[in-house]
Amino acid sequence: MIDLVLDILSWILLLLGGACVLIGGIGGLRLPNFYARIHAASLTDSMGNILIFSGIMLQVVCRWRR
Image 1 (cartoon, one colour):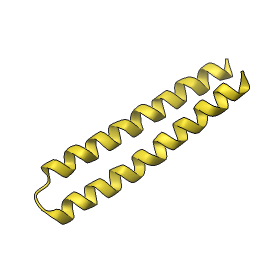
Image 2: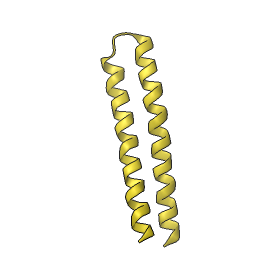
Image 3: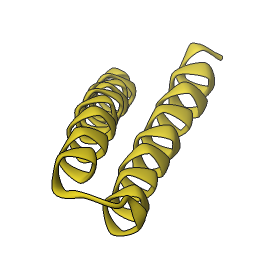
Image 4: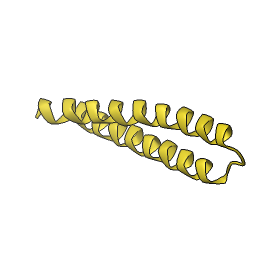
């Protein structure tokens, strides 16, 4: 049961991280000037990396427990 919960939670984190990176990429294309683009990309990429790495860590824990 705990394996299923960890697996679902890890996929949620991975999808949220991917969405953050995608939104940052779109924002980098749509914002008007250089500094606004850099600001948007740095914020969303940092959060996306944290979420993706957290999801990967939970995937490893879930696979290691089997």
